[in-house]
Image (tube, rainbow, N blue to C red; front, side, top):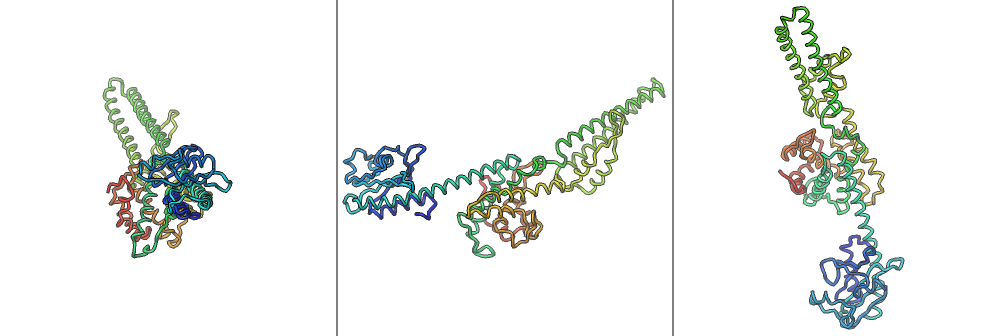
Length: 476
């Protein structure tokens, strides 16, 4: 009893031992809920549903209230006995022995009730002493189990709150942490059915699965330390940069129009007002051509701004555009595109510059530092280490440490596959389209064949149909 931490297993165990020690036909156990001033039980008189009754009500309620032992040779002769359970179940209660369970401080924490001594005789004083002694041990075991349950709820609440904090930074990735956890744990469970190969003897206990789940749920927590504009950057230029660029193009349009009207005025003075129609026709044609060219430049810039792979020829054209000028309201020449904008638009793939990419990758370091500050229990002590390695590659090209293959935990290897799969197949995000299931598997396969991901774990991921098994909304 002292070793059992699962309340659902502990309570039947206590009743089994209680029935043996006093030789009773059956026993019931009620735990005191001080906040509601009630007794509750999941294991009362053979009932399969939870029972609650007020303190002071019935035999068990009286014992909980007074802390005194009640020993009835004939239950039906005592008005405190509630026959409801007997009537519903068809059971006939004869003798009853009900004793309080007391903790180390002597406070009542519940009651144990023994029914019908197997010999047919009433329970005696020795039975009372034995059941009281067992009740004291049971009280300590239940208190430990409840404390263990509270600690688990505390961790669950902390982890859930942390996931909310992560996803509030970038709502487009909502659900990612949970899906990665589900996929990773499903892979770990699938290893139980693997009997050949590298992972034939790799098995995870219940506590190790919990450790893996927490590590997976918290693997991206370090993103709270990444600047939000970088974290949610959907295009190569930030919104405020694009706003400034568009304003500059609007000024350039006005400049072209102003220059056109200046030329019209000069031409009219030089050639006479009777040539106005001819002058206007010439200038309209020229202005339309210049505005069209300006619009084409803007459209090209907008194309370059999207998170697509930039064609080689576009680099050269972007650098040519640095020479374009317009005149501001003070007739000063200004560049149409700024050097930093050209540099950002020249990003070959995706939306992040090298500096921004390093900032995003730093989330792993932030995650590790954060998780390392938590006083994890002995069974969860590897959570920081597992989360730390989820972006490492077996060929040493991963980040942040580029550690070699032997030092990457198998839990982290599984999480890497789950993380990449979900990042590929997740709903459309501003900076990318969702990839179909089969194409995602093909991408993972290429990474496994190139030595970046674990080939054997990839095979298990595919053959065990982990996404179909783990994700409720899977669409293959």
